[in-house]
Image (cartoon, rainbow, N blue to C red):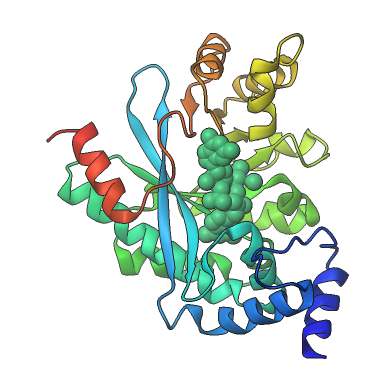
Length: 289
Ligand code: C2E
Ligand code: CA
Ligand code: CA
Ligand code: CA
């Protein structure tokens, strides 16, 4: 019964496309119930880990930024991808303490890389959720974490999706302005997938557009598939914004993106998301002191 309630709540949120994660569990409702219950304890039981994926400058080869990506290692079910548990965390409000932990962990990690690997200008990007964006104390929380971790504000980038940004344009404008005033940078994630008007781009204090991986995937598929990516890059350049291509997997995509003058890229071609230890090793080898 509880399981059905959990399922119907998630369905009310419009997530009818929920797919079973674990093959041994044969009902959506049961799986959601199990996941929701264990999610309540996951933080205190230290089951979360932050992974990091590099963003590479395509002309210099330099790693300029690491994106923090959350991982949940469930004791019985194994590694659960964020696409499965983040909707549940959003629904239950657990996303708030979890996100604060991610932010803090990522800022501490970046500060440590800056100091210990002599990478003073390395930045970190952290994803913001829809629910966080509705919190009146979001900016205070970010400031608090930055002062606790002593990371200089300009080395933190917050990623919001176009969909989240467009839910309440006035509120977004206000929050982004405050974040900009404290020196944090902002990028628009999954750009091009939100079916939104482009007019907000000139009003919001944003720093970069991240081209959604669906467009990058199309790049290698022949005729006319470069049109959207070409347009997004031109738009970004025209507005003086940086542009990042996500999901770059092949050299063909890399070469096309370079011709299109996309300066920053992220994807499996360079590196999968790495654990803290792996990322430290990779950064040390990549930028020998
Ligand atoms: P996103 O922010 O768009 O992150 C990019 C996703 O693409 C990541 O999936 C990453 O592992 C994956 N990816 C990177 N390079 C490639 C590639 O070359 N090819 C392909 N096919 N995929 C690539 P991941 O880590 O499973 O995260 C999925 C989504 O979950 C993220 O999408 C983001 O929306 C959300 N997410 C992850 N961590 C957090 C977090 O800490 N907070 C919040 N609010 N959301 C998060
Ligand atoms: Ca992102
Ligand atoms: Ca994205
Ligand atoms: Ca995405």
